Image (cartoon, rainbow over all chains, first blue to last red; front, top):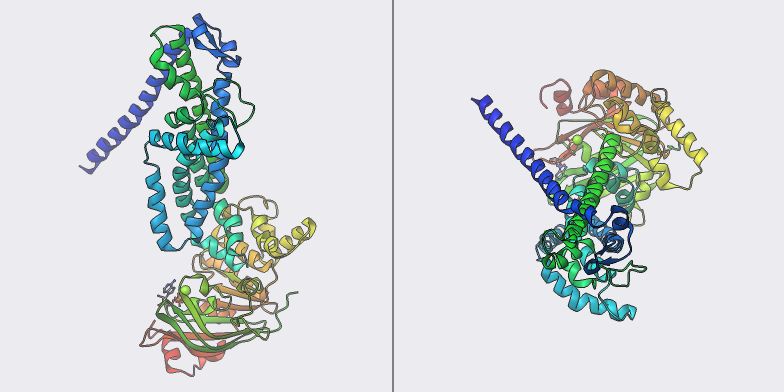
Length: 289
Length: 260
Ligand SMILES: Nc1ncnc2c1ncn2[C@@H]1O[C@H](COP(=O)(O)OP(=O)(O)O)[C@@H](O)[C@H]1O
Ligand SMILES: [Mg+2]
């Protein structure tokens, strides 16, 4: 009887896992089917390396879009990583219990704010601040996008990194204190390294959220498809391009196929980041277990 | 080699966890460069007592101490004393082996030195080797110093923890049931090691194993929680005397197995 139950449960888990893989495969197949026909209009090399994106004239160089996405994401990581780690360390190792009890749910609540609302705030407030602080003609810049994305990635990073640090057994903290380490030395040399794989997972999930995020970025980055030279100028990301232009294209047109091809590139980049993260995590696990 | 010229003098030491008192007015004179065992039934305050000797007790929130612990003529609880400094001159080994999981064997031993003082690479390597030799682990690990400490067996991990504690040259070494997670052979090696170290360090070892106490310790302290549940020192003396001719009836009952 129990065995039959086990069999059924096993079967269901297998089915669910299989379904997930199948969905991903179907999405990829769909992207490929809609995107690959672009080669009929435009060859892959200029597509990947071209510096100009003029879809109405049939020029589809996605380099500005790729660089725009990378710049906004890198900026977001540069802001969210130190901030998220600092808050997670504070929550897990320093804050008194009542502050933790207030702060953690509040932070997790932030993750639920719809991105279009964040876009409004970014457009109205953050862009103005960026404009005034740096004396720019416009506040709709890559940096504005980075700030908003960092804000959106922070709850994920903080929450998961906090859990990871808290999961480090007290035995190691005690061993460190007993050697004469201060609280800060213990955090730096023992606790955070012991939580490194969890912290890395937190960062990767944060990045994953940032690179795929569309709405907010579309609203605050100015959407100029030029290769950025500084973080203080407008950029256009891959996601914003797809969202903004998809409504205007005819199915089967070169523009339509080009947007799907952008989607393929985005898919591949996300997959590469995830695989990279998995590899690093795996190597860390191997080393320490 | 190390500088333990004095033992640990304990005067009217009481300890609390929040409102709950765990230790009441313990007086004890731990002799220098000898092994002292602390025995007694579980929950009688043995761990609490030795955690007061290196100010680890106060790392628990709301934990509090009253009384004196005098080390090299200084009360470690007087206000001008920095607990971090105390923990550098009093080493501690825990019940469960706890080498740092992200550090290599070498880095585990070097951890305390890196924290505490300026060092050169070559000196560091010498200190690490010396400490591993003292902990009778060198021959087993000398070819894999870069491996993770967690890959070692339980007994090796515990000796690694002893090496880690010895690396900063403490005068006093506290051990809280260091063998309770180990098999008999690994325990035996630790006992042998304690006997080796005797004479160079003031060692205080908590153990629930009376045979172990009688084998390794020059002096033995017997503790017991009273009717009120608060741990007290019942008897302290030379191990031989405590085991063969106890002064207190409760000690006799305990060592003859009549309770506990
Ligand atoms: N972290 C703690 N918080 C509250 N009470 C504790 C804590 N650690 C120990 N105690 C209590 O203090 C008493 C003595 O404990 P302990 O020193 O660990 O005894 P032993 O080491 O002799 O078994 C026990 O009653 C125990 O419940
Ligand atoms: Mg104990």
